[in-house]
Structure formats: C-alpha cells, structure tokens
Amino acid sequence: MKSYSRSNVADDVLLRNCAHCHVCDRSNIAELRADIGEIEARDLHLKAGYKSLHAFCMAEYALSDDEALLRINVSRVAREFPAIFCAIAEGKLSMTTVLVLKPLLTSATANELLAAAAGKTKSEVRVLMADRQPRSMFPRVFRRCRLETMSTSLQVLSSRNDKTSRDRGSNHSHRRSSALSSP
Image 1 (cartoon, helix red, strand yellow):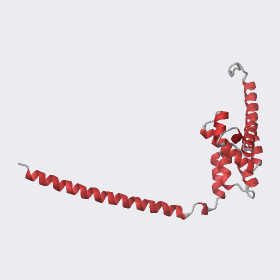
Image 2 (cartoon, rainbow, N blue to C red):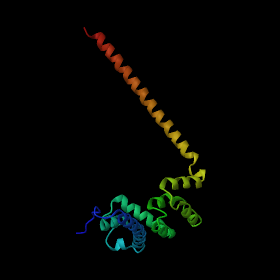
Image 3 (cartoon, helix red, strand yellow):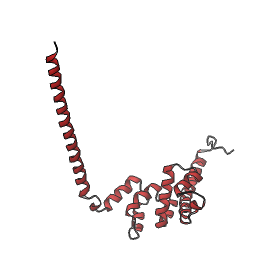
Image 4 (cartoon, rainbow, N blue to C red):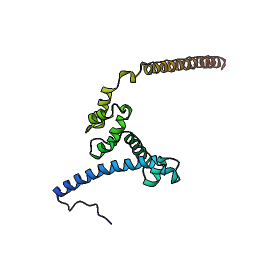
C-alpha cells in the first residue's frame, strides 16, 4: 500500500513535489473534462446503460451529485470554447470561474473574456462580468414583480388581519354574553 505520509520528506523536496503535483493536477483536470465531453458526444454513457451523463459520472467515477454537475457543465462549455481546456491546464482558469463566465461567453467575446479572467478569483471574475453586463440584463420588470408580489402579500396579510380581528371581536362578544349570563 502506498504511503501518503510526508513527515520524513525534506521541506524543499516537499515544496517542489507539491508544485509538480499541482501542475499535473491542473493538466489532469483539463484532460478529464475533455474525456467527459467526448463521452457525452459519443453517447457512451447511454451505450453503457445509463439514462444520463450525470448518472454515469456518479456511478462510474463515484462522484457526488455536485461534483458530477460541475464537471459536466465545465466539459460542455469547454467543448464549445476549446481554449478553456488550455486555460484550465495552465492554471489560468478554474472550473468555478469557467461557470461564472459562461453566461457572457460567445464566439465574439470568448477570447477577450478568457484573457481578462485569466488568473482571477471567482469574486474578481464576478466583478469583471458585472462590468461587462449591460444593465438591461437586470430589467426593471424584476423590481416591479417584487413590488407586485409584496403588494399581493400585504393584501393577503391585511385580509387575514381583518378576518382575525372580526373573529376576535365575535369571540369577545360571545365571552361577554357568557359572562353576563353566568350567576
């Protein structure tokens, strides 16, 4: 059995080994996303008897629900924009930042967005996205819907309060009449 203990490894060797493994890990991540994308393109998951790529990834690779969805979604975006595979392998993008970029990626914007997002954190990419999104992506209709929903909710609450007040009033008058008739 392989030992994963590092207690006997010298500091400089440990740091060098970790850096090397990190580079290999990024490359493997890109390779595996490409493989998942090709499995989907060839319908190999269906041929293997699975109803979905998601079910295939969970069963065959022991991935959790979230892990499978993340890998599948990144694979789909990267197949559409192949430069993403290289950016992941080179450590310029993470799987999370790819999915943050997804809504604005088009053939016209991909190269510029991928370059602008290179090396940025998820939060920094969100800021980048906010700067590039036209304000119309957050329509006033949304605010109106919220206000209309709030108005409807207030009307419902108001009618419930009115009913409760009427019910309480009839209960109070019933109690009063009961109290007066008692000896």
